[in-house]
Length: 264
Image (cartoon, rainbow, N blue to C red; front, top):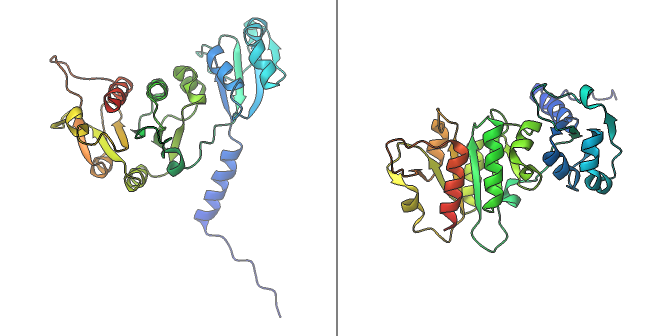
């Protein structure tokens, strides 16, 4: 009997497998004393290469010892790490693998002490804004910050520096389909609130009767705001009331205000 020819994989399967292999080899260069220190002290980080000046090595000596990594000492005038020339690296750069945070349904369960909160970002691509959101999310105890896999700020050195260490502790989860992620949160009991400047309902009013429920706060990019599909997916559209004639907050400030209000 003739041997059966192996079944050829569909093209989409091949592309998916190639992307998965590429992702497993992807690395990120973190820079700046604060971001590098927090990454060195994070046992969940896979650390590959540390480039430091003598001065930075002295400032990071405790973290370098704990991470058990051999630093490469370089001259401050010829900093060899492959960073953007505009990066304020402070003499320290660390090559790492991106963090693996796990599945949405596990991250967003909360710890049982209070109804959990999550932040969802719809195509927010500015790493400085996302870094600031991660800091606020950590301060106010959000379970996760969720963003789409594409058209979102990736995990980069600029984002880590803006997050001022929060990237090492605050889950930043990328999902393939944001509308599906919102649906998954709703199936877990989350009340999903989308923010739009023209919405009729104020944030406080929307949250007044649901203090015992998990809440997801969904923000769009500055300018375009939430996409139509995202608007259709949330439970309610709300606005943050303002006192003066100018009522615009950037996304990181809006997230901080909303997280605080949702905890009250």
